[in-house]
Image 1 (cartoon, rainbow, N blue to C red):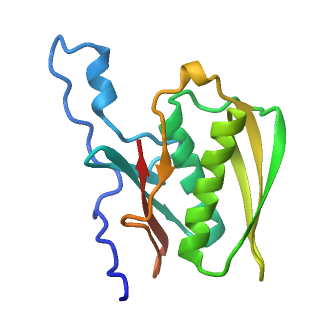
Image 2: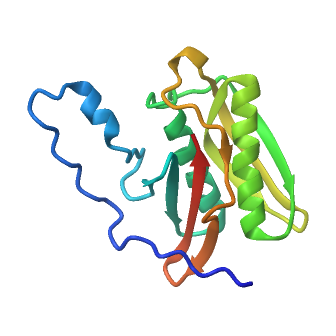
Length: 173
């Protein structure tokens, strides 16, 4: 059965809700939108999970911004200006949506096993699938803001539009 396109919000940058007086810093943590650059990705609530919606002008940029969004969910601390190494990825596949899923799942796996995050993504597509390089930085497991268990197939979508690409995915927390 063909998948229906996911309806995306018309506004990329929703307003931050007011924090009640005397609520303290913990009230700020309920706001789920985090970005390194305005309008690139946004989160949305989904039952006990969290979703990310990503927009980019081309497919390699979309995969890189989705990865950046994924790591922003793990820790609020931005990556250091200089990482401690480069990491290469190679993922086989031809279906762009499944390749997107495998890309994010691989990043989450490497984080969970090696306790490193990534930024500065260089994503390239070829006839076999995806090759990418990224700068790595250590993430102390004690400083993780949110434990991410898995990328899910629920509402997984990657679409090309007139103005670029849009992806949406849900992360099990």
